Image 1 (cartoon, rainbow, N blue to C red):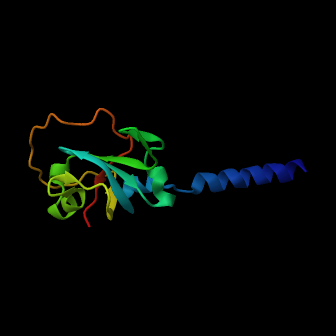
Image 2: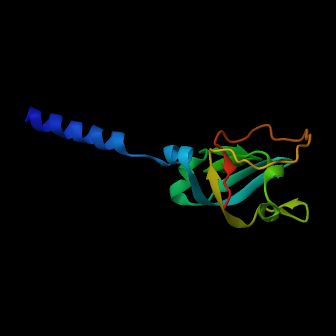
Image 3: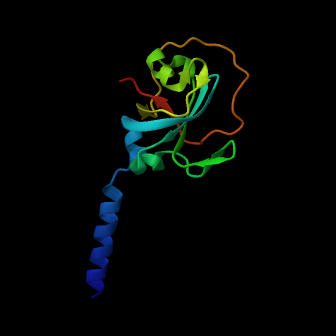
Length: 136
């Protein structure tokens, strides 16, 4: 009986040790997610992942302006993003918090050349889960 229990525990640990989760995958590649804008200011964007199975890539119970979000992520350096992406975030200069759109997120910084500008406006509190937008 003892041998059977030891074998079961060994097999369980073997299979747990061999599985890759999304966090490890993001270190090597990118993941497609559907997001919604929580807020944007200057060069910072806070998004909420809408895919139920991918919300774990973001912060749980992130509070912003008195509301709780699950799956919140932080994107920095908005000035590096293409205009096609920015139109999902801003509508005539106003933050668009209603539309959902798809992006690829990654932990790998891009090679794009960015227009550097000084911006004093920012958020006091941002999600700990920080990503870059991967090129399509």
